[in-house]
Length: 248
Ligand code: GLN
Image (cartoon, protein in one colour):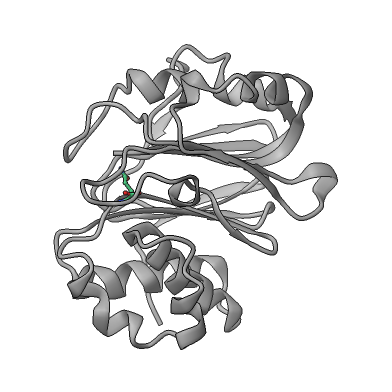
């Protein structure tokens, strides 16, 4: 059921987040420790987004399993970053297997990921999609629930919503339109990370001037803290706020 992670802090090699930890994203692609709602492995693609030199993010995404990609280890060995969002994908049955369906989705400063599924897709989201500009629908990157969730979040961001508002508002609207959906969203602009916990696991870990959010802890360090279901996490390098979501 997909696994995602975000990091903010002093620059670290990508490999230290993806490959080096005993249960890093690489390991989670073939042996996740906490899969819920179906799915056993995360072999339907992966993506990594980071902010070179603090500039706008770049992404490296592929439709293949992370373990079969020979370029990523080389990239990860020479790339250090102070902000990253990465994911491995377990495609929901019936959804396309394509690189564009792998998170992170992106625009400008923003990187986005969804771990979960929208119940009743696509019919359940027709009423919400009708609220989007037609152009957004015509330029949807790929016909998946996650891509439409990104379009809904992005529409709010473009309209001036703060990251936490955009996530909380989208989760509330989709949960109402498609009850029983699993809506663990992850959004960053390279400075703040916002995560919703709705149907899947999420853990957080604070370090000196750094913060990690991950679907599951990538090692057995005691500082990992599971976040209860239904919460919204807002994290920066200065602090971590775990709250009940409120929507406008
Ligand atoms: N439903 C999304 C997809 O198919 C996310 C899947 C997941 O979280 N496993 O891409």
